[in-house]
Length: 603
Image (tube, rainbow, N blue to C red; front, side, top):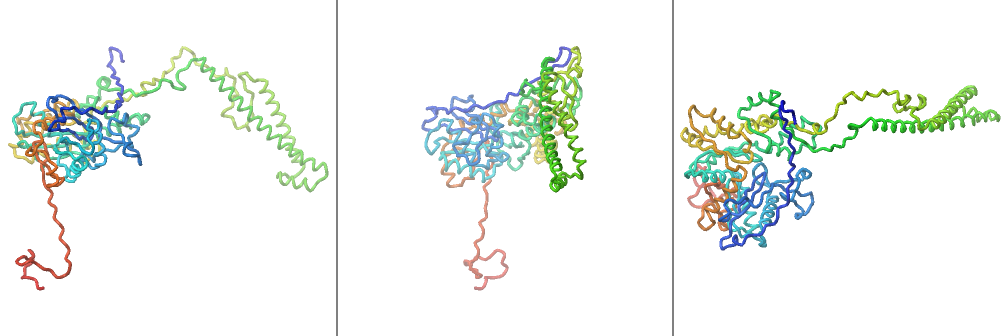
């Protein structure tokens, strides 16, 4: 911590949250009545929330809450797949993680089936081959018909559920909060929703979603986390492995905020006092045992003595090797000289040619030099053996090739630094700190300025202005009178104030608007879906429920609309014309081709 006169340093530690496996709950007996209680599943791209829609438990949180990921190695069995909270730490398995989503649309139904298995098993459903409870499931705004068809096929064919109801998570949250505020229905307003993969602008007119004017912005929490990771890895290249995506998500959730005026807030960060006061120092885990750290004088002397002994051993070994080589060469030259003394001139001259010598005088010169070198080498070895244990090391030949390792100086020739000189101390803890300054506001800002990450698209408020421009002035007044913010990526401090400031600049002078934040942006969708299921129990004439009979008669893409659902637009597929069996065309009497301008064709 800093002194009292200076700014206070804010040092935080990463929580590194580890998931614990979910227990397998017991199914309460009261949920197995004549009309089984519905199961409410908020199928989010970041987190899945599941629980019961039972009377008397309106304030209970979801029974299950886990990340929507699965980890399975290539070629592993289905039973070896880890789901959600079964994965204690996501980072070691990051390359194996798979999700059922592409953006916010379910496309991988194999993973979705594993998610459903996990939910039903941990909720205590033990019925073999079927789930006898109605299902309330969230889906993406303007969900493609093919994706809904595959989801209905999975639920009705694989799990044999009796009823299914689909709704939009943002609309469930919208109606849940409107009911809490006692607003009169039908509700009119505009929803700004931001989740993990994308954000949405959803206008609601007289209690129904205006699907024609819904817009999606492909910037949300995952892009902010990736952007923050990229910024910090560029800033701290020595800690690339420690700057993980999970820690970046923690930084976003716990330490980031939305600036009401982005450029004005950046100017504040130019002040050193403001920076020291507002920067968050994130402490990375580290080990205090550092090789070569601060050691005492005695330890340094001991290490130096060990180094000198090692150098002495290396030099002695090199001298022995060189002495052995010189002795072998001398023995060979003496053997050649003996040939001359024995009178074997032919062999002598042949040996001189092999040695690349011209005469006996040159041979004698080499023998004298080698004898001198051998004698000097033996003297050095004797001297080094006699001086063993001393600090001095004798001089060495230049031909040893160990000049960098040689120690021709005595130990006391290196001057010692005086003890009263203050040595700089390496602060290992500070080295492992991430200074998160302007990154705290730059990453949430991409929701309003996607161009910061290189995305060529409008921000959230520009898209809102575009959507409002498609309505009449009277409709615009009704919409902006209830601007609703929901979604996990809307929980940054200052988000509501930023939207209000942008609306003030966007709307005409002296116009009225009201911005409301969801009471719990991450969980209100599940609470709203449960409240809707309690108010509209499944039955033959209930609005919003799809029965098994409806699925078989109307197809898997069928949607029973309700106040929190998408608008159902059936797909009209033109059947391809059957190819003519021959060149002769036959027409029923009175029916002719519409494009034909002549009479009946001749047979």
